[in-house]
Image 1 (cartoon, one colour):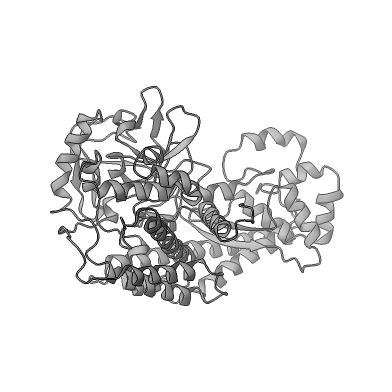
Image 2: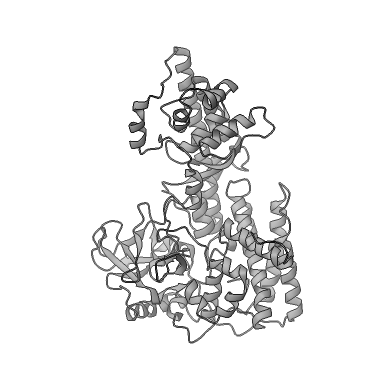
Length: 571
């Protein structure tokens, strides 16, 4: 998305301003790799580690100054070439053009009226940069030998992009030249801008992303030195899932043109047509001539948008704040609570989410809090009493409280927990609003403060909601109101209810939502967004996001351990 990539004129570079010996550079790279691969810092020391890693990265960047492959002129100079190349290769280009939309950056502008659900964009496979095309390129031999590259498709795609960028004969050059040279994700923030996020729920994601990216860079720099005896990428350089040709699995890809679309609320309107072997996108709504064409990236929080896409979306209907909760193993009732939670398919310790809408907690979080606040007698009733399965079935349904006392306890807990989290911030909401009114605030500082304020607003709403619910159930208890009881006849009602009151049974709804498994997400790229979607989980951002997610990070760490200790089994 254009919002993530500001216009910058780049001059072609012919070499570094100073000569740096290969040994000196490898020593720095090794030091960086060692620092990023060590044990996790103790609680409260994450920022100190970040500053140390950042210092090493800046040293490397200074020594590599002038080594990056740059293109003459600005991005605007290459959009006409991009459109011509796309048309020659069978993409649709007749109803839109690439336009600069100011604060939103570059996007697609309709050149005629487009109807809702009209197929307006398609991109054939031969235009896509994929892991498969990387395997058939100069990277093929290296990919076949390195298990870490095989496990991390996003890194494979990043290296593929950089190799093609360095080749004057690449068929993808019209696309690559149209990509931005810099981004607005926290990887590119000044240290002072990152510091604005200290105390937020998002800061751990930001620090982890920086560390993971630095580790990946150091590892693959050394790998390429060994296998190619040359460097094709620098510390200044960093996707999208589609089906393979046989449709049997998915592969990561960069999708030209489609990745220029900006985000709005709505539904996923992108898919892959296996019969015609092309990515297709239909219009989210009616668009008049000259209007900007938007698509929906998926149910991403603003933390995800800022960290991975480099923009903040003020009207985000899916914004949420992560909150980690767990039953203490030292608690006397731990075993009973863990068993009830297990029967409901909920871990005894889990990362949940507080949402920005009127119902701040999900069915899964409601079920967890009810069990968390149960007395021993209530736990026995859910483990040994009559109709235990039915009772477990209703744990996540707001219509059937465990008891009035239990409801009072859980909403009091939520009220107090949200209030405590608010106290961890260095500023108040009012102070953040005042800072955002400053006209000279940098873009990155503005993004950090907007995200910080959005988190507080969600926590404030959760605390207020908890207080309101607590008072409501206290009134029920004082009035001696009868407790609603679940009946067998209620099953059909529960199964047909599609809102947040749905009960859960053996579910992992929150975990799936956090990982992108509930709904496919479109992570746009063209340098401006990291593209993903196509009915599958996101990969990683080869250009702007080089972290591939926790699973791929685990794979990299496991493979690194195996490289160092061949006798150990890879996870």
